[in-house]
Image (cartoon, rainbow, N blue to C red):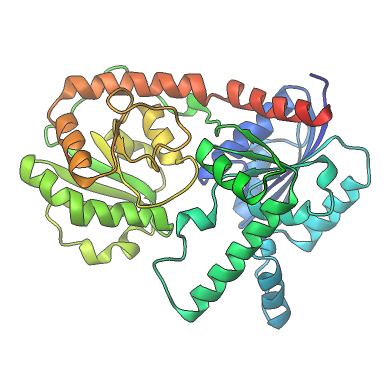
Length: 389
């Protein structure tokens, strides 16, 4: 395809070991530039340290990446803006002004990552495409708190989500489930399904993993996010007691952001270890024999499941947990909706190291064939090509 002038907006910096979406942004931005496109990236950052890290990864001699700090706005005007355009505070006035300047110059594509970036493209729809990673309305993100403030936030967030989805004529999303939901809201949109890419070279795969003498069931995630919290609560209350009864020497390990804060009420459970805000999750993946992730709700691809596949950690999950990955139950992972089925699949893996090894190899191979940077960036380019016609 011809080389393009692309304006790319990202709500978090493109870091290979940053947040879940940051890992995709790293693949996307780096890949587009390596393919020869002229890309100017506008990035919202929470910390000065993030800006320094991004500038080291993407030196200005080779990349046009512009970082802007997220400002903590206060007062009645700021609250009014938030009600009208939820989560627009992420994009500072400086970012918006600089983007507006570039939009007056010749360009081919305005690529907006994440739904709230849509606020910046609402007046430039002709050449815009927005990538939807998840939907609040599917995630039940506000269901665990029914305060008056939360009800207001839910109302305005869901309304804004609908408004943005209805506005854009071209939408990328990560899974068929999301695509089907979006088409019910905007039947006229051209919807493209492109999986998240992951840089597999950052995930060392050991051909033969050492098995723990005391098998470890693990869950890794951010527990300030409703789907991950629901998975932890289900694991601790409905799944782990029976798994522990059937595999008495098993241990349970829960790791991630806000883990101790969110799950403090479960701290006394037998053989449970909770690790919060660890600097690197890879050693915990390596120490896990089965990752059991069974969210009650949650849309989009789950990067922690992708990481488990990449590192060779066997996974037991639900259809929500495996969303966007063409995995089969009993081949690449244990996939089931009911508690008993999840327990059976977990116990079977804990008691069968050979089966663990078989799953490790097949899940890694699946990820290589479906979510590698080469494949996913090429699919994004195909979307651009369709827009050019």
